Image (cartoon, rainbow, N blue to C red; front, top):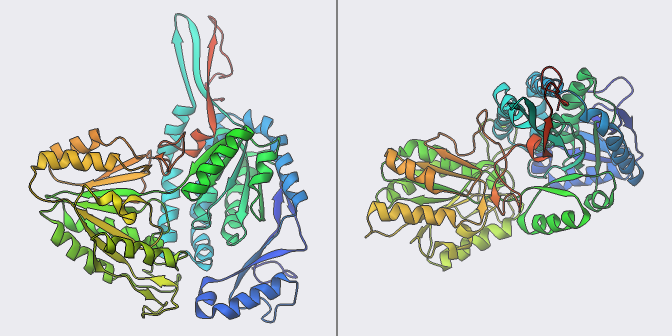
Length: 537
């Protein structure tokens, strides 16, 4: 990697107004494998490099790359560059911006293997990395882009008048991708470009390489190809800069990924500062398995709860199992969970990652057991080789049975999002008709204060109809799907109600959420802002 005279690893400066901005300080990224094999040595080498000392291994194995640490002045220049480019980019015809989406999809396909390698180096398991890229391809599919174009611009004729409903770009959008999934969410946040916004990406300091790769190798070349003005996209790596964004006169929207408590507080700060908060927060997805469900299909989807050790928001977080099949379902889940083992992220089939909140994992298990739950499987700490270890980075996939629907929300694992590999299975009591039970289950699902995704497995079409018509929360409902987490064209990839999406949350798309609706009415024989094709937003 790198040209002659440059380090033999990836090195990304800041990207401002279409130009590189170098720095005398860098964040060095050690490969996840090197940290798992010898964490003290890897951390020691990282600190040595970041202090400016020579690399004893001369960029050898264990070093994935580095990113320039942006100065406060660079951050301000990036904001000013985005603001300067905003008027011109906002006037870009919608067709050209849709072409940008097509080019990003093509670039993503062309560099897929290389991008996966970057994600793996930063600790994303190969299996999960490939799944995330597949999701992005659906989000950028011709079907999804076409659907969003319909939402962005519609024309009508009424009594000889020209009418249009169009969504206008908000302006400058700042994106802070999350540490648990920065690679794909950098591209997801940059979808705001497709509606005419300019964008500033802040690559997280702890794991910046994939975000900078996405900007420089995927998105920026596509922008160059469509002739976007310099400053349409900017990227910096640095410490949290939310306060700078809140104070900046240039910023219109801030996309925030994170936990619920901090996210809701940040939402208030945004409103007070006159910024639009776009929140992608926690999920506490509910999955329902009915008495006539295809259990093989359901179990295959439910074990997605352990993808990335549960440290992503759109995995199933709790299950309601019909009492007629609960025992068999739990047995199958335990068998499937036992096959999921730790490993290095570059190994095929690995889906577990080190758990960041290991203490919370065991606290939540203890709470469930104290309140009557039963441990079905898991509940131990493991090393990378799958051996039980008091100091291991991994938590064993854990399933807990919770009997009784009425008191289930008193159990922390059921009521709140768990950010570790734990799946509580709620088994309602017997003694009520299926009609009554289904109504109670729908009420239980709707009582969820979060609202990302919900799913159902049932053969009876009347059960499916009642569930789909009765469940009102959640940005997405999956029915009899092989995947709870999977993506499809047209369908929203993110977005949800309640604590998941904040006050303005719903199932939506980033190129819609970063816009506002505007109506246009023109007299007979006139057209306003649409041009002959009506595709200029």
